[in-house]
Each structure stands twice: as structure tokens, then as C-alpha cells.
Amino acid sequence: MSEKSMLSSRFLFYIITISVFLLIVSSLFLLEFSNTSTISTKVLKLILVNNTSVYLKPSAKNEQAEVSSQPYVASQIEHKVRLEGQGEGFSFTDDGGNFISQKQQRTGACDPDQVSLKVFMYDLPPDFHFGLLGWKGYAGETWPNVKNPARIPTYPGGLNLQHSIEYWLTLDLLSSEIPDIHRPCTAIRVNNSSLAEIIFVPFFSSLSYNRHSKIHGKSKISVNSILQSKLVRYLTGQDEWKRMGGKNHIIVAHHPNSMLDARKKLGSAMFVLADFGRYPAGIANLEKDIIAPYKHVVRTIRGDASAPFSKRPILAYFQGAVYRKDGGAIRQELYYLLKDEKGVHFAFGSVQGNGIHKAGQGMASSKFCLNIAGDTPSSNRLFDAIVNHCVPVIISDEIELPFEDVLDYSEFCLFVRAADAVKKGFLINLLRGIKEDKWTKMWERLKEVARHFEFQYPSQPGDAVDMIWQAVSRKISSGRIKLHRENRYRRSRLFKGN
Image (cartoon, rainbow, N blue to C red; front, side):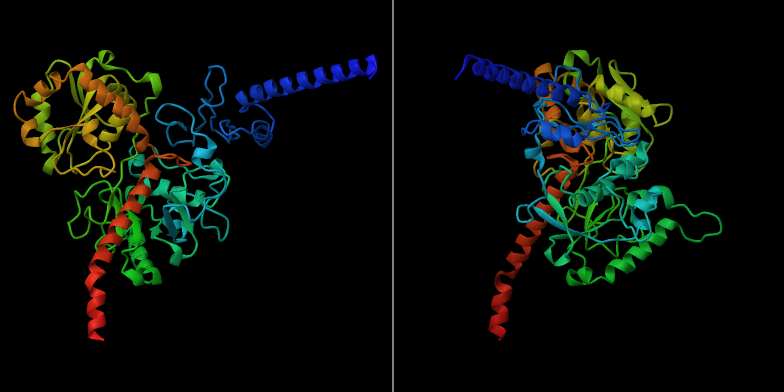
């Protein structure tokens, strides 16, 4: 080979090497600033193809895509999505703060043979679900386009959010039909009810109660009651309901006053509830029903922003309605016992006047957060405390807790019987006697479990939506075991009769 050819080859090699290097650097630069870039995210996805890389979705109107200000590291970047009006963005990270790769979430469509739960969902008219949010689709359209976050109707904020469980579960089932949406493969929607383990009823019952339970004008019945009546007629007329008397159906009634008219008629179904406070045992119980967490309304504390023991000046925190009825009367007793104690914040509070933000700040500055029974055994306050890493002190003898078959709440909560809590000096001495090392152990565990109480779209492995579907799957399995045990000798008796 001539000297000229060798020089040309060497020059070509240098040019290719430099070009590849510049391509990689420019790709990383574009990825970091993709929310203002005009380049297609599909192009970015093709440029970075390793499993730990992530591309940012294009920002819809009023959406935000936030990126860490630290130097780019593909395996640590946090991909955040925000739906307007639905609270803060959520990081897709694991317990250790590491990015959950696309492979860990899902790549492509779920394999029906690998999922835990196959769900058939009725195509109820929009009046029962997204129509309650003001959504109006095109003629004949039942569901919004969940592939485009800008087209998803937003849920009302404030305290409405705390009972929005059916909204997140419905969105999750709809998204399970879209391969491009990365979510767990715990539950998927199937279009043939004979293939399903459970049948989901997409009625936004809590929203219906909050928005439409009052009678207006010359009407003699509320919209909420009309919808419940229509739902009962519809469900009881379906072959799917008749087949098992509704036992294979799941209905979300998270607000304690939702489904008041229909709950007895549909009581054979599996309910998703906040607690059993306003239900007779024959209608709702742990044997057949699911307890789901409230959607917290304060902002989540993340990473190093969580203050340790020494930087939480408030010993015990409570802010909310003090005068309650029934089992909640204990709040008033505790108020008079604790309101003047040093280091205790026990005050009246509401969502008015930036109350939610102030409550979040107070919890984040407190070592212990009091979760006291109110009109019902549970309240959203417990889950606000958890995401603020404020050790909950649960004073509610009748409370049922979400996912307690897989979570040991004693690792991150204190439980105090109501009879002990109202003894003079008992509660304050208990809290003051807990040393920093014991508190820190509970605090560390709180930071680990907080992700299980996040509702988000799309759902992520181990979040509240995923945990609810897992709980439903376990409930179905335990019910199947009971049925099979009952069948042990039943078939023998049938054979004997022949």
C-alpha cells in the first residue's frame, strides 16, 4: 500500500472516530434539554438505545418535564411527568433512588400468560366516569385518549383528590391496551369476560357523591342517586353478574358516603374502600373486600430533603377538625390534654387559606404525626404523614390498613389504644421517651415504603395502583382456595347420589 493511501486511511479513521464522539456528546446534550428542543423524541430514543437510558416525553400544554441539574448520568436520571391539576410530578425511581429502567417496568405489550390479573371492564357510558369530570368525547366515544396526557380529563384538586382511587385504576386499565405506555404487567384489560379473573365497574362513585349528591331546583332526586339506580339495573341485568351473583365484580366506593343507595343491592361484589366505618359487616368485610390508601394531598418529600431527627423541632403534630362525632370524640379529649404541651402542635385547621401547604410544612418539621380517629376510623392524614416521613402515631382502635398482609406497619408507625391515649401524661411521655436511634429506624423504613402510597399515571412498579391490583389478585386467590376446600366433599356427595 502506498504512503498516500495509508495517510488517507488514517485520516478517514480519525474523521469517523471524531464524528462518533461528537454524535454521542450532542445526543446527550439534546436529551438533557429535550423539553425545549425541536428534535423528535423518537429520534432521541433511537440515538440512546441501551436499557438504562430514558427519553423525555414531549411536553403537552401546561406539562412539565424536569431534569436534574447535576451532570447527566443515564442510569440515575429521574423521568418526571405531570398532569395539570393532579399534584406534583412523580419520579420513576426505586427505593434507593435509582432509575427503574424500561426493562424493569415493561417493554412492549404485556404477555397475557405472565400477568397476575386479567380484568374485564364494562364500557359504561361516560356519564358514569369521565363525563363526571366534564369530558365529552366524539360521537360514540366511550373513553378519552389516555395515550396523550393532554387529553386526559384532570381530577378536581383539594380534598376531592383523596378519594380519587377509581380514576387511577380506570386509567391504568385503559393504558394497559397501549404498548407504548410503560407500566407494570400486574393487571391488564381483556375484552372477553370469560377470560377475566375479575370484572371492574368503572363508576366514579366518590366523585359522583362529592359533586352530585345534592338535590337542585325542582328535582326530587339527586344525580348521584339516579346514577346508582341505573348502575344497579345495568349490572344485575348482565350475564357476567348473574353467573356468580356479582361475586366476581369489583366496585370502588372509597368515599364513606359513596354508593349509599346501591351498596346493599351490590354487596356481593368486592368493594375497594377506605375503611369499614359506615358499613355493616354483612356488606363489607376483610374476607372479601380491599382497603385502599387515600390519595395524599400534601407534596411528597423526596431524597435528601427529608429532615432527620435533629432537624424536626416539633415533637408531635396534628392539624384538622377537632370536634368530631362517634369514635372521633377522642380528638377533643386529646386536644385539651396536649394543646399546651411544649413541642406539640395541636390546632384547628382546614384546606382554606393555603391549609394543605401549611400542613405539609408542619408534618415535614415534626417527629411524630398524630392520626386520630374522626367520624370514620381512617383519614387522609395518615398518608400525608407517610409521604412526609413523619412517624405516624395511630390512635384509632377500629382502623383497617391498606396492604397489611404484606406491610408490617409496626415498623414505621406507633399504635396507641384510645383508652391509653386519653390518660393524662401517657401519650406525651411515650413520645418523649423514644430515642433518636429508634425513631431513625422507623424514619428510614418510612422512606422505603412511601412509594407504595403514590397514585400516578402511568402506574409504576410497587406504587399504590400496582399494590391495589396485587391485593385484588391475592383476595381472588384466597377466595378460590376457600371455594376449592368447600368442594372437597361436595363432589363426593354428588357422585354418591348418582
